Length: 397
Image (tube, rainbow, N blue to C red; front, side, top):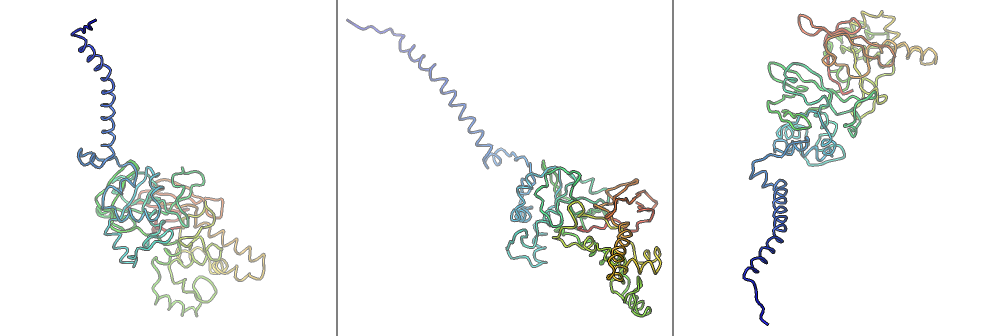
């Protein structure tokens, strides 16, 4: 028997084999193309060769995108702020230049690369968070329009683990900072804001030529304000036979200061800690840890109250130290007057804006009325009918 093969058989077998292999080749080819595309997108060659930039989503993405942010980025990394910064949205950062960070270290003697807890080379986590504003993505026009007070994410004596939580009735205020536009030059707490600004999906970033420092306490701010000339104070003390001008006890150097009466009244009320809280202290309770002091001068205090009234308000509790009832009444009377001049929360005139506003008094259920209007020389503000000479001094508490 002879086996006869059709001359077209090899062609049919080859065609059948080709049809079977084609789907396999096509699938393999598609997988190679997908893998190459995925690898290219995740590789350095992708951004270099295709000239495509990765989207800057978080503040950490932006700080990592350029060496110009290197020193501050390294600082926030050492302070373990990366994770909360990555969660942050709709905010603004003031980032000091590399030279500004180095200059700060030199001037304060923090060149040594030591880190201890919440402080790295002299910068605390509270100070670093003071560079982050929670009032949204602030635009250039917002900074250029004039004076404004902003709320930072830095809080006295507290960390910012809950920075992503929505504000509620128990919203805890952050330490305020103030930006001003003077002749086209914008400063944040006196630190120049540079012309360069950057943005990411989380918000905006502005370069600043210095580190922002935590402001002083209310009492420190009062003591650094305009004070009576020391020579005049000495003459006044001598003329009154070493008795102070505000009461009946021997002369106290604090009365030489313009706001000495404020200090003495709040001390008599037992509220000195409200004015002079340390940077790392907890003030009263969580809801009351930020306040606004509507400070009065010594002369205004003397005009408002008689000599006998001043003596009682400032020294009544000390006089009645041996009588429990009189002592308690004297403190209550001092607090009733002091509460007229301090309110809960940071009530900035710039943030309140024009109109009539009420803010709750500290230590009382009553309110303080603040009226802001436009005068011939600019903004005019009154608190309970009294004109405010200077407003929006920034204190940490």
